[in-house]
Length: 318
Image (cartoon, rainbow, N blue to C red; front, top):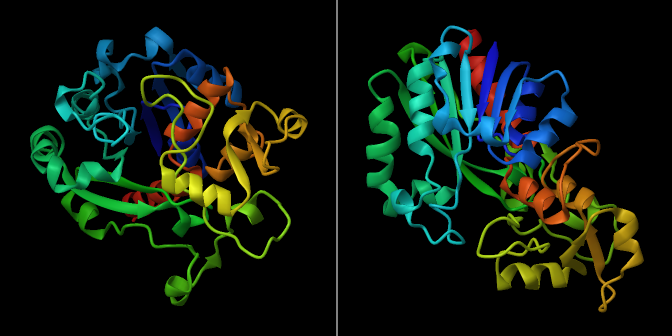
C-alpha cells in the first residue's frame, strides 16, 4: 500500500509508515531544514520541502488513485497550551488544508494527528466543523488518544489520532492499537514488554530511581527559539529528580560531555533527545540545534506511528 505525508516535519509518521510496510509516495513539509532531514534520511523519497512543501498551493487531485493512505500532523500550536489555544483564529491552523487534501486525493484511509487538547470539550465544535463534519460525507472517522510509553517510548506523551476509512466495513473492523509495553504496576497485567525509564534508556548509571521523561517540548513553540526541552515547572522537578539537565541541549554527545552542567547533572544532546522520542540513532536531523530539537519535539514518536500505521494496514488488508 502507498502513503502520502503532509506536514511531515522530521519524519516521525513517515518512518512509522515505512516500518509498517507502506510505500512512500511523497512528503510535504514547509520547513526547509526538516525537508532536508527527510531527503538525507531517505534519498529515494519524493520530498517537497520549503516553499514547494507549502500545502496551501498544491493541487492534490493529481495523486488520486496513486495513494492508499494520507497521513499527517497539522501544526499543534493552535490547540496547545504553549500555542495559546486560539484554534481557527490562529493562522497556523492547517486542518482545513489536511481535509482538503484528503477530499481531493480520496485515499482508502487517512490518519491525522495532534495534541490531546484537540479532543477536549473546548474544541468539540471545532472538530465537528473542521474535521469530522467536512470528511463525514465520504469517511467514517474515529478519534483515539494514545500514550507513547504504551509503545515503548520512555516518555509521557499523549496524542490524539483521527482515523478515517472510506469503506464502512473496513472502519468497523479497525481496532485501535493495543499497548505493547507497560510502565507502572497498574498496567503490568496488560502484558507486553516493560518500557524503560529515562535513565535506563540513556544508558545512565542506576541511582536508585528512574521514571519516564516528561513530554519533550518543541523548541519552535513560543515567542523565541530555545535549546531547552522543558515544558513546565513540573518537568523541571522531574528532570532534577533524575539528575538530568534539560536546558542548553548540546548538538552532539561530545559537546555535552565537554560542557557539564554546574550541578553535575547529565547534559542532554540532540541524539539523546531523539532517542527519548523513539528515533533510531542514525536518523540525520539537519539544522541548528534549536531547529533539530524543534523537528524532534514536533514529531510523532516512530514506535507510536508504527503502531497506528500497522493497525490501519491490518484493517485494509483483510
